Amino acid sequence: MADIDVLVEEVENSPFGPEVGAFFDFDGTLIDGYSAVMYFRERLKNRDIGLTEILRTAVESVNVERRGHDVTELMNIGVGALAGRSVDEIEEFGDRLFRSRVAGMVYPEARVLLEAHRRRGHTVVLASSATSFQTRAAALDLGIDHVLCTEVHDEDGVLTGAVAGPILWGENKADAVRDFAEENGIDLEISYTYSNGGEDVPFLESSGNPRPLNPDSDLEATAAQRDWPVARLTHRHRHAPENLVRTVAAYSSMGAGVALGGVLGLLNRNRATGLEVAATVGSRLALTTAGVELEVQGEENLWAARPAVFVFNHQSQLDVVILAALLRRDFTAVAKKELSRDPFFAPMGWLADIAYVDRSNSVAAREALAPAVEALTSGQSLIIAPEGTRSPTPRLLPFKKGAFHLAMQAGVPMVPVVIRNAGEVLPSHSIFIAKGTVQVAVLPPVETSAWRPAKVDQYLESVRAMFLDTLADWPQ
Image 1 (cartoon, rainbow, N blue to C red):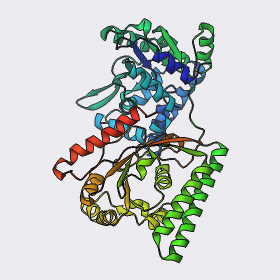
Image 2 (image 1 turned 90 degrees about the vertical axis):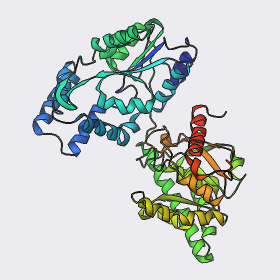
Image 3 (image 1 turned 90 degrees about the horizontal axis):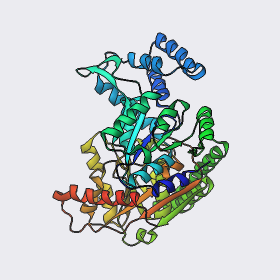
Image 4 (image 1 turned 135 degrees about the vertical axis):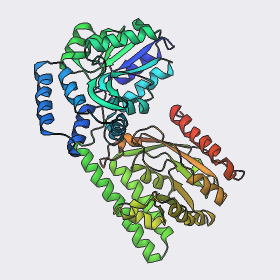
């Protein structure tokens, strides 16, 4: 069985150029599970599904799983239930579902494989029997420009409850790949196809390099007969017993460090002393007990220019612990107002004298940032996530202007802190920490003395480009 490194090396040695196609199945291949299941569960949770549909779906699911039926009837049931809904409504639902559920199902190794194909200039295509509502947000996040999927019919933006064209299952998917290749000048003999299911043998056979990923038993047997290299992608086992133990130990350690810092801060009537104890002892102990190691490049830049505005890309609750462990002393932060009531975060927030911002009220948010400027001018550094919220995936969200205005008002440098892998160790919207290494690149301070408010958008894009460049080409 090949591993992901073998597949990536193969791609790196493949022909260069867009005439090489890389066709990826979606459910079970790029993601650990099935988007249709998430879609169904979300509708159940919202009570947006009737008993008849539930029963019909259950029966047909058994027919597909146990009796070898294709997915035509199952798809017709699901699409039929959308009749009368607007395209915009369902697209918004699909995008929201991706952010809250499906994004966390994407295999991190799948992103590595996709990036390897992009570096070779290959034409990357998502090919799935799922609908565009299930695949659109994923394709955008994964940087896939071409999507072959089951289209849903609408009239004037309102869904009719019927599919438009063939359901891309079995031979239909293979036909769609061949048609796409012919239209786009792709040489299938030197192209790649990736899938996990036995129903996708025709799809896999459509290229000269069929590569089963996470194969089911039927596909594994076929791959063995035809000598196709097989690879399995993995997620860190976030719900494994050892991860539960690590998580409890990490939270307890952080809590103990913050409690000790709080006591010392009260006794000495000095929050700075308490913060230094909480950051150095609590955060480091939490990372150690969680089995999380930090691999830091550019550590000297943490101390090259203080006070400074430290900006970081935000994927995980672990980011706060990482920044505390790195900065150790003389810092405060800006956080959303909701965290002021978080029993885990609030004590550290008190020690660091954090400025809490109500993101729903722009006027109140600006007023709340005034203490942050005062802290900077008095010698404290500031930590802020310019994305404004956690990204559900490694993809960088747009930056907001607040951090840049703060740096200009206080006349201090800005230091970009680029974090990689934190979302794999502790994903967004999860509480379970997995053992692993988080990579951090601290970039040189960016001088802001010549910045002017009228050009804030230009400065924002320049700093964001530093993050994008570093994430795309990690310093060795």
